[in-house]
Image (cartoon, rainbow, N blue to C red):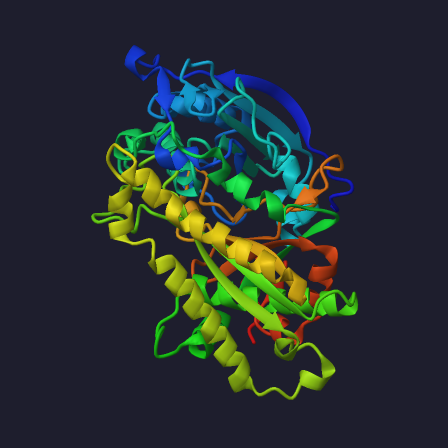
Amino acid sequence: MSTSKMQVKIISDECIKPSSPTPQHLRTHKLSLLDQFIPSIYVPMILFFNPSSSIHPININITTPMRSQLLKQSLSETLTHFHPLAGRIRDSLSIDCNDERARYIEAEVDSNLSQFLNHPDLSFISQFLPGEASWHEAAPGAHVAMMQITNFACGGFVLGAFVSHMVVDGTALSAFFKAWAAATFRYIATPNTPHYIYTKGKFDAPSLFPQNDAYPREATMMALYYRFLKVGNCVTRRIVFDAPALATLKRKAASSTVPNPTRVEVVTALIWKHIMAAFNLKTERNIVQNRSTTLITHAVNLRRRAVPPFSEYTMGNFLSMAAALSQCSTEDNYQKEDNLAHVDDDRDHELGRLAKHVREAISKLDGDFVQSLQGDGTRGLTKFCEPFKEIRETLSRTSADAADGQSLDCIGFSSWCNFGLYEVDFGWGKPSWVSCVGGKRGADEPVYMNMVVLMDTRSGDGVEAWIYLDEQDIAILEHDPHFLAFVSLNPSPLSVAIKTP
């Protein structure tokens, strides 16, 4: 069945209350210093559970209505230990944990989930979310968390979630899913069935990184990115790197400085390199500039960089931003006919150079940096603002160079790898696919930013990259043979064999 014939029908829209009331002393959740940086947009995440690829014998006879009741019952229990998710946004600095409940939508589709997964339509995926993905910030009084369960005729289901970025980042949202799944699994597992250890959310970030009223609102992520928001036709492409392709890229990008590049570093470097070439080729065709400079930013999870590391169940935003700058000149554009003679060594050198930039930028956010953010006073605020101050200074310098024929572009990278989302098991098998949001933005909001989201593949040894670019840039990228040699374009998440270079 094509998605043109597939319809998502909403059958219920209710709110789930925590099974126990939130204690009075926890009724107001103050944001941490790191949370203050984040705008009140929603983090979208979508998990597909296909019964044909994984099913537990212990629950094979559980019907969809029974499953629905179990999911709501376990969500109520889980919200007790993740109390801000059952509240409302009070203002830009706090959450009202008033137990007014998380929004919970149920929907149904009269088809088999495997039919969709065999040929995933990225423009249809937003139908599995409880709202429209948007750059607009949520207003005071808005729900912190919204869930949608979409049941398919085959018995499969899709979990789509919106949770305010004010209180969770990707790691925190993944932790919430794991806790919810563990609570559900306990209801249906036999005594001898291995299952998750139920873990409560830790909301101690405000004490680790105290809120600071002097925080400059102009330093928030959205304020920083506003200059790079574009109006036009943004399109989405999902590309997949399998394990052999990543091994080849690591070998090509290895250098004396970075002898062992990671999969995130090499994928970032390759995408950065070829998007720069696309930007440069487009400006040449339009006879606007002869060189383009590209700034990339990478969201960095500070939990793993702290000494000792913070728990993955530590809720909130433990994020900072790494940034690197590179210039692509006309001589670097391998897509031009007169440059096709460039040897592979040159391309490998460029890939290694960009991987080095990524490593150097991220390595600045080390354990000492995390330690410097903690404690009262202005020291943490000053230290936290340093990376963004450097970015703004870089922007100012490159803007001054605009008169010399340079243009400045930005690509925002975010890695969702190693979140453990493919281990989330509510009792009906692990996800067949975990996806980002695909398709175009709403018709009334033709605003977008050049973005790349990196995710694990189901096998765990590959990388999915979701690329959001102007349609002209995407068209150039899709016809770049040196780029396509390493990727597969939107393959089925259920497929076993993925193209290798």
